[in-house]
Length: 640
Image 1 (cartoon, helix red, strand yellow):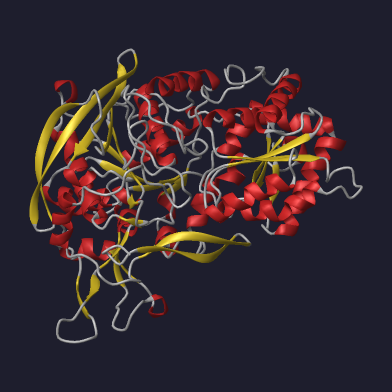
Image 2: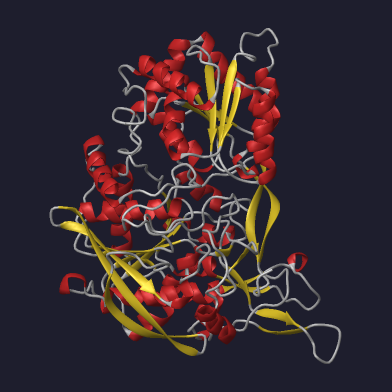
């Protein structure tokens, strides 16, 4: 356990008729949390331990280090689209997106700078899709004409970054010295992104960004670390002067997930009351509502005069540099009695995401479907009532993908490049390449079904295993028994063992591989169907890449999957949908997909073609972002 008494637990949660397991923070299960001053002190002291980059719960990388070239980072262990991308590739993607679909909306506030605040940004730091999305957003806003700053912690010594400023910040009863380092990256003539990295000893850890890999718990001082980061970030537009000119106090902040959730709280309760940033606004993007940044107000401590522990204060509102009843009410959350942990536990916690939802000027999330789920008891993680009360200011915008890196027309890793006019021939060649690469029997007429992602129950890998023998056994229906399956990914050890057992059981017909970023390209090109029976999925990216390569996705109709895969009517379909998610429905939909491949090739190829023609670039997404920016800047602050 961490010294916050914070741990991750699994709880069954129903969603849209599904039963799934989701990881969320339970902050008052274990005793021994730190005091505010201990947290600040230990933030500087905790610099030893660990070795390799920490992994998340799915055994993907938690933090990969900047490579020696200072531009790209190592790709080992990277999952799906969570690979690191050179900055130049992001620039090219922006231009390619413009070719794919020109902007349909021009902001009336292009003169207002955009400041993206994120706990990770590719290629410097990465634990998942957040790093890639925030990197893409920076480039896209710069290309639209905004002066753009992206702020992130300086977890390592990043080559090519220069000292720009420093500041003393009061937090947890003491003064803390932070430094700002700057790197300019030009995206096109006269346009680019100012990257600002906040440096402090608490950010330098040899393990992951948020977790101690060896102990399997989050860093004990995370509340202090990210409160400090938020306070430092809110000062950056005025104390840093890239190109000799500060961004000023009229900006549009974009905060991302719980690590930056205190930024709109500080903007509301510390800045605007003293006349600072009164013309600035803040968007808060929810990438995964299951992670909210929850920390207890009180803790259990050993009693030197008795056997029973005593309850003592843990973190107070003053420790966070806040005062008054407004900030307290925005951040406080009380668990109901049945969810409390010990006798005398009042259930009171600081919920950082609750504070952000209540104080930000507008809430965005990564798909329209996920925005709807956030308003439900199942997908709202105890904050659904608050989200519903603010739903007029809630928008879901589907993420885009890098349409340069994921392009079958130009992909250098493929045996044959192709587009929607010659994909039948091209994918046959790529299927033979894939079969040879992973050890499947070479037969271009055999349907190849693939899975790529984290090997966790959230991704539905257990259902895939449960239905695998059914797919392999020929029962005379001319469908099952005529299937090859490729399973690719890293994750929970028992799922890894099960994956390898299935590959040994059905050698030549089932292949199992650790994730490899180059293989992923071949997988999309050489497969006919992609399995994504996720129990929940805020956005999802593999299903977009699969369609771009002509691999038809089979997805659960939840979150971003139902927003990016059309399942009906048949003449518009680009994939197949599962709902509700259980083994019988899974088999039924898989059978329909396999039968369509064999019995209705014209229908199947039409689905492939429509998927390849779908625009998954960032351009139309940024149109929606710009609309929300205009609405936000034209409105008064949400909390006045």
